[in-house]
Length: 273
Length: 251
Ligand SMILES: Nc1ncnc2c1ncn2[C@@H]1O[C@H](COP(=O)(O)OP(=O)(O)OP(=O)(O)O)[C@@H](O)[C@H]1O
Ligand SMILES: [Mg+2]
Image (cartoon, rainbow over all chains, first blue to last red; front, side):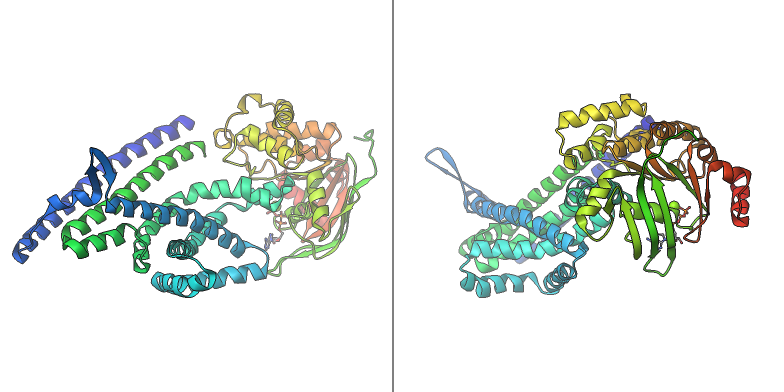
């Protein structure tokens, strides 16, 4: 039975790689078509492509030393904002999920209020609210405002994922743990969450990718992330098309790398499960 | 079994009632007293409240009224008492409920380390002894999914025994097993019974009841219809409903 399932798994993996390959081909075809469309379109517009001016905004070469250009500086800020927000949003999401599943009415109510408020208002409004209203009151700067807004916003979605993962674990697991005398905290920590997290890794990854994309919005409160740096350069140089293409490519590279990484991780976890 | 020595009452259940939120009455004015080292087999038709009775004994279900005392500890709203009782009462489930993300060894180590606060080395020592007892030492590093049903259930028994419980509850422990694996699990249960473990066993295995039970309870609709020794049950049950039920499962 065991060897059979292993064989099956191999077949599945084969098809998986196969279909990934086809997906990449399709993807390249679409990109190619788009490039062709845009280049023929811009020709009609009389757009003057100046790609050669772009590299210096990515890296600099001074006194024989390689340095980061403004876009890379922006990328680092994007990494910082997204990285911290990612951790915070998962923490907030997990706590909100536990509150929603708790026996305490007050905790459940609190979690519901949080979720409804956050999911029914735009991220931009939350960002402005935290920066312009809470910011002066609590004395928090742009960067922290950006991180807080993103974490609180994405946390609401992460909490739904955590909740779904937790309630997908069979009741028998709780009962076995309780019958052994484990406390609810130990049961969550050692039995329920380790199993739930394996199951929710794919949606959590999508959530992380959304977060990185949504982080572009922090440029509206003048946090100098990748998007903001791009806007500044464009306003000075009018390299509109070149820079937006470059910025999109950088975002794409990050998110694709992230999903590949998690896919890899997931395969390894599944073997253990 | 006549010569078996029983101790004092380790479990007393007095007039307990349990109605589920959907209105189903699972236990109604249920009373029974169980002595140390006694093996009690609970039989009855589906939905008669056998599982609910077991689950009330270790606080997996709350009772609406009545009293349960296990080894001198009252099972009430007090969390500490509930935890104390769960430490002393082991449970084996129909669906095994092993922790799928842990090896067999870690399944059995877990509660020893977390609840009994043993070191990993101490826990592992006992775990290996228990695996020997349930005859499955070679699978210590396997994951539950790599075991047969019978092996999984024997690991589940070892896991419960690792807490050194004073009472073991078995809820249809062999019902989910392929026929050829039932024997190996029953064998472990019989060994426990012979060693003097107090056991409450819900089962359809009448051979087991006949061989090791000290007392048999026949339940219907949340009530005890008849209680007696296995001999009494199989030779001359008093109640008509008991006779009908036994006829059904023995044929
Ligand atoms: N969580 C629950 N919520 C509502 N009703 C329940 C719940 N658990 C059990 N019941 C009901 O309570 C009654 C007794 O159930 P119980 O599981 O104790 O019966 P049982 O004797 O163990 O039956 P079986 O032989 O099928 O396992 C049944 O009518 C069942 O449908
Ligand atoms: Mg049952």
